[in-house]
Length: 445
Image (cartoon, rainbow, N blue to C red; front, top):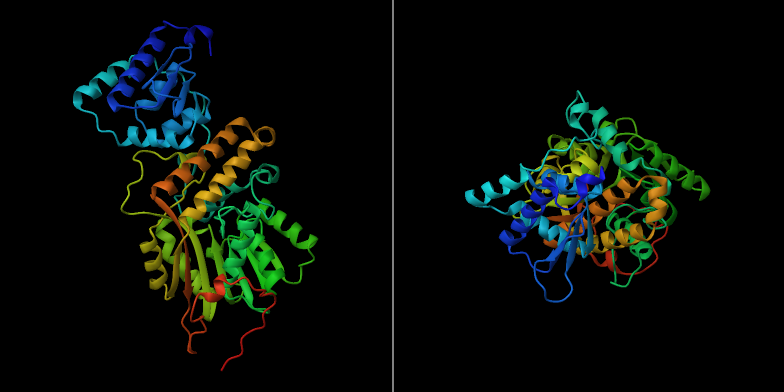
């Protein structure tokens, strides 16, 4: 950027500063410091250390961010380096709530626009991120689903390894105690899923959307099942197959590049799990998702589903979404009611539902701490912008969980069969810390 554009006293800088002072005054913000491109700074209150400092590097970004405020306009400002944050990131998202839900009067709007429109519109560089206009097919087509998955998951393994746990599990962990490490909590989560499914040696087990293979490997190694994992990410499949070979589990575990909605030739399964995959299923295909799982199950088979859900009583921020463009293209969050309804319409029986919202807050905080601790490595293998995207996404999702706008639910379903249900009568076996390795198949009575 030319130096003259950022000097104190330029028309753009003066208008941007006046807008920011007016906005902070209108919202009655407290505990915030604003620091500008020319060194000018002020606090919205003078008691103690500010809770958060917003550092604006570019007066032109003020127009881009606030003319049509949304999670996307603020997110783009942050990841492109137009502004930085010092202090508690939760305060940043609280401010974003205040701004996006703020309903100014006509007089206030006219004053805001007077200053914002007086800031020249800077020439934009070519946009990156996910652009729906690049596709001739709409959401739900096989090609578009494949590319949306690859957009997020096919970053180099060296990017993921520093901030995920040693098993490379990329979903909500299960903290049996607040002091548990991320490695312990993810191992406990994998075993918790296996206990909920009541996996037994010799059963056929399918992981729909298996990631880097952690659940497939755990189920095959610890419970003796014949495990198949499917993913649309070639890099995930390659990594999972390498781990399976290294552990000598080729006879019990396998991972394929395959869309589970297209599965027809893999036979039937005693147990199926889907962890973090339902968010990638288009809204119009939610019933197809459960119908496919139901069709793949044997009678009395069990389906475990874990996914992020939307709270219908707490509105999401209006406007275009940062996550859609830079993190999870075409993602859809159903409510837990919609999820259970779709499963029942597909012919499944609901057996159990559990909300792990607080566990996901802890997981996200672990991930972000580890991501920040390895900033230089992550920026080297990807880019500073990618680091900022993931830092903002992890912090923002944790905030949404804290606010209760989104949850993460584990749901357990059964495909009705002619025989009596083999489901456990209590949840006791899910919580006791006993060895369940290679449990034999149940015999019919």
